[in-house]
Length: 139
Length: 139
Length: 82
Length: 82
Image (cartoon, rainbow over all chains, first blue to last red; front, side, top):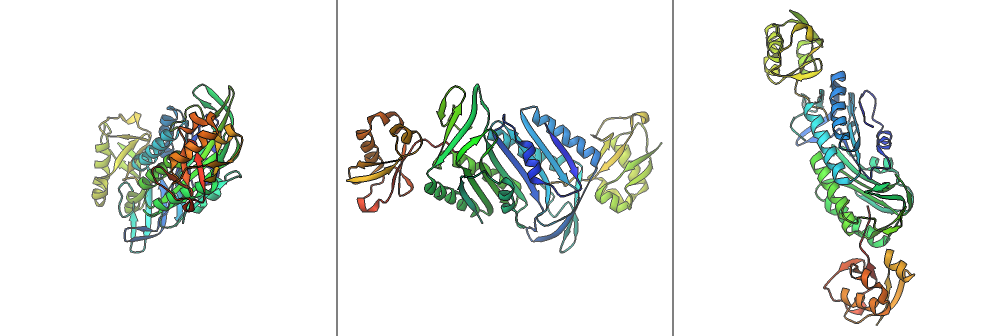
């Protein structure tokens, strides 16, 4: 059963992981995006995430339902608010029968979240503030 | 800095995850293998894992060092002993600068662990006991 | 007709508000929404070029909407979650 | 010469021991180790066909070892970790 959310509080990674476990699934893949200090020669000190929350939850739900229909448990939670270095920005977890599917579906989900879910990053770098970061491509 | 182990006690997934975090890494991918109930029409009730522990640790260390040399933190811990359904058998975690690398390296590590690290599964199925499981191919 | 339009991220920052009331030509499409914002806030033109439009919390492009089909309009700057 | 050889998993179960002392022809190779086990425990032939040999905790195949180079020998049935 999927669980998706936009969260104003720090992500409880362990609690989210525990929700994925089930006897029919043998492979659990999680992706956790954390706030990184360096992007090439740009140094980040902190981030603010904002979201169009209601629409973001709808988009996340669509994605989770799509992957769960193939046979999986899916969890996607994205943080909003102010984040410091190493704080968790996003948790994407997939439990599936076999590991190949779990890897493939987890990567698909985070790739798609980054492309089409209405969430925005305002990045505080040491040289200036950037909406979307220095290289707003798939990284 | 890598951490590898053969563990006789249940895996503390959260503590292992926490070891991966670092300001230079923005993408953390973990694979957790859990004891699955069904493999096609074979029902598993529990497993015993045994290892050639000293050699297994050497093999895991080689793998971790190889991947960390590309720029990553790596954790690989495999459980031995008696496991029940949904218990964690293996934790493989990779923290890297970008998510594509973290996915690729994590999958490479678990694929390779399953192929060449001296660890063995004795599977208690409802019809009989199987060394290696019903389909000892990459699943 | 007058509609409230939600703004986010860099667009909200540029205009200093998270919602504006705009006069939008009907039938409503992504293009008429964008044209309405640009008419009232020409300084948004560069950002607006990269924005998407969501009507009733769904991305739209060529679709046409009658006024009574529209309960929520939003301008979506390039997303950067994850 | 006599050497202790470690056994694991199904092989240990078949023989009922986790280590056996075997007379192995020198120089030592994967083939001489396997031949030695099969000579003493012919019932292991089928399993042995799929086994690898580790000398000093490293998989070996064609390499030759003098007796004084060998500190540990193990027979490795098909692994099934993960």
